[in-house]
Length: 261
Image (cartoon, rainbow, N blue to C red; front, side, top):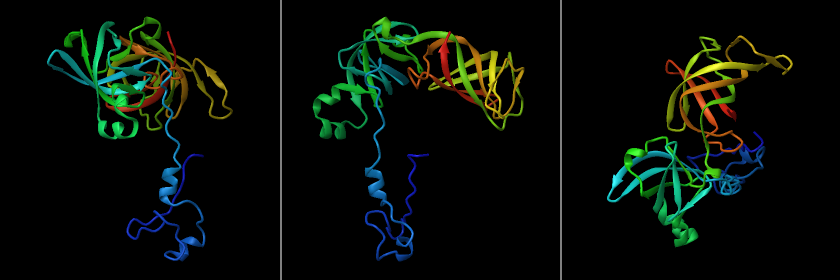
């Protein structure tokens, strides 16, 4: 909430959008002495791009084009350049990035130059053209990562996670509850195999091994997926460390991965 700014404006008359409301709106100028809308926007802090972290690209769409495979998605962290060798996970096959197409190529070239178009950085939504791999080996929800095994995400079925249960929960969560694990483009059936602890609402202490979780509970649990996917702790990669649990079409909890088993 410290970063939230409240700026009173009028879209109809343009008050406090570009210039301060001195003569045009004396009633507003009596109590408001803050920024105009444009001043507030120009004061935004740019989002931190985790360029220094290992490369992670989430595949949201793909199709075959000529000799290459075209995949669309977002760079979750790190960077990739045209010509780089990458790994397609979880299958582990190697591929080469032959070309990078940016969605806003004109704006990027005007601001940073032509060389910037050959690189995709964390936060960019881009199209990668891959060669050296069959399209049958790639699917939506796959992760494209650094080829070096030491820099790849772990491929696992089990994790320890912190969750916040929905306040509108109708059926309590117990050990053995079956849920649908949703992460970026993936939906994977899962089971809550253990409830490690929950936070006491009165004093904030941890209650070990509770039998049941009800609405608005804050808890630490273990989840086992029906299949292996790329998982990382939220502190290592936000996109591969946050998820939603659903049941019967409803969201029952949101959470972050603490530890990959």
